Each structure stands twice: as structure tokens, then as C-alpha cells.
Image (cartoon, rainbow, N blue to C red; front, side, top):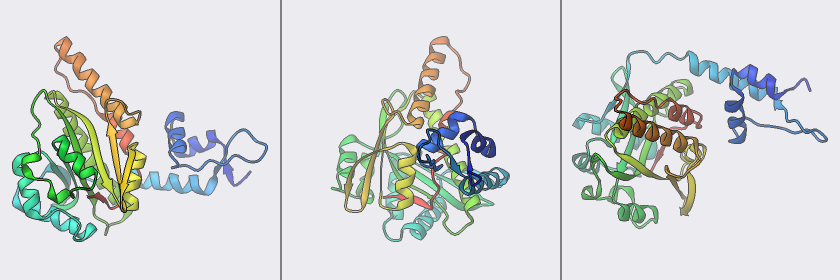
Length: 290
């Protein structure tokens, strides 16, 4: 058994708590092997050691003050976002006029990460009318055909359904940096979701489709449900009110805590670290798009 770790040894090698370790086992990030005649599983030493090196590289990567998360606001932002999307997805992306029209309907739909001023990652999340979402999910229209008038605003006291239209990190950089950019992007976007909660805006459902292995892996590992397939595109849905995915459970905790604070008249911010930790375990890839 010299080529394997026990569960305890693997946890110590990775520096993980028991719950986090077995979550990675259940989701397939860590490979478990049960030898014939044995009840307890073991874990390949070479795979655990490689995972430990990857974690060390990730933790020691210093993104520095030059890596910033921000909203898309200017024409140059829109142009650079489009150029990165085209680099990753070719012609299967939303053009500049479409992006600009959506932003006029709701200026809080596109977010980017910049490293020393260069755009390296972005996410587009659209709150859209339910009927339009269903047409998109059923393959009746593509993302770039969603009219600007069907993009909703985040009105205080409202419940909205959103489509994750695109999530991209530059593919032409080393994996450790790409993970760092992805972490910064998700962290910033989750802070924005927390801000929506403080405005009494609730996201009830998230939708996405993807035809790329990396995009599909992101959705699977985040706990989205597969609800169909259109050609090569897999359709995903997450009901934040009922899903048992870690993201949804932690999001409900944020909502519950906010409601309690409202009742108690408190104003301090709710921590979204649990949602962030739930998302950071996903597999990294260059992008997810429509």
C-alpha cells in the first residue's frame, strides 16, 4: 500500500478538513479506490501529491493590487470583452451592439477582472423575462437574439431569474494565474450578489447552456441540474430556493441572515464566504458561453 494514502493521510497531505476532503471525493475531484475485500477506501499517492502541489501553487500565487474586479462601464470595456470572447469562442458570441443594448437596459450585467489594466476575465449574467428564458433554453433563440427590452433591472423587492451568458478567463496564460483570475471574478461577482440581497433582490433561478467540456464541467461541479440538450449544447438550471448544491444552500443562508438583520434592525454586512468556498472547488477552464 506504499503507493496509496489512507483518508486521514490524504487529508493531512492536502491540509483539508474532513468535510471538505470528502466533498472533493464525492464530486470526483479526488479519486477513491476500494481494494477487493476491504471496506475502507485509499487514495493514489501520486494523484494526491499532484493535487497538493497544485493547491500550493494556487495559494502562493499573489495576485497583487494590480488585479481588480469592476463593472463594465465604458465602450472600451465592451470592446475588450468582445475581443476576449471572440478569442475563446470565435463567431459564437454576442456582438458589440448586442452587449451595448443589454447594458442600456441594465448596467449591472457584465463584470471584468483586469491585471495591470489588461482585461483577463469576465462574466455576463442577465436577468431576463421568464418567457424569453424558456425560449432560449428550448433552443428557439440564441443568446444574441435576446432583445434588450426583455432584460430586466434589479428593482428593490423583486425576484428575478438569470441566464449566465458567458464566463471567460484568458486561455493563453498559465493555469495558476487563470485560476487566480477566476477566483477574483467569482469573489467580486458574489459580493455583487450580496449587494443585491441587501437591496431585497432575490435571484430565484440560474440558467446556462454550454457545449464545451470546460463549461459543462463548471456547471456540473457547481451543482447545476442538467435539464436537456440541444445539439451539442447542454442546458442547466439551478433553483436557489430548493437546490441542495452548496452554492444554493449558502445563498439561502445569506438571504436568511439578511432577513433576520432586517427584523432586528441591524445593518452590518452578511458574509458571503461560504458561497465563495462552494464555487472555488470547480474545475477551471477558459470559458463558458452561449
